[in-house]
Length: 114
Image 1: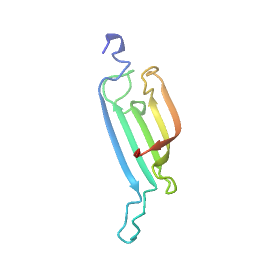
Image 2: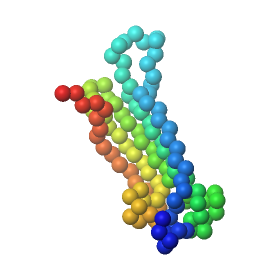
Image 3: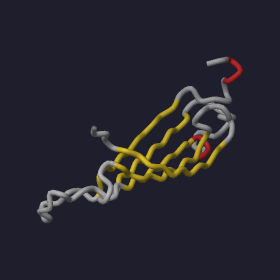
Image 4: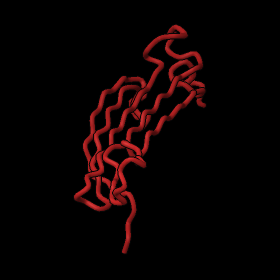
């Protein structure tokens, strides 16, 4: 890390990810082989651990969070939709000293079959 960035940028981070894939889960009570998932959820957190901006150890600004909810409609085979919420420092590190809040909407694909 450049000396100029010490105390302004975190070089030591703890990253966690939780993924709940294909909710609701398939059930033996429903004998339908075509039962498909409706939602998936991904939650991520990053905690910046080293000295930064003279923040306290448990300052909420040290925490970056992201939540993504995927929707897999039954009427589309491999196409899905998602919405993502993000709060934290700029993830591109261009304006890393600023806290940002973003919401994204998009279209995704699981598997491409040709």
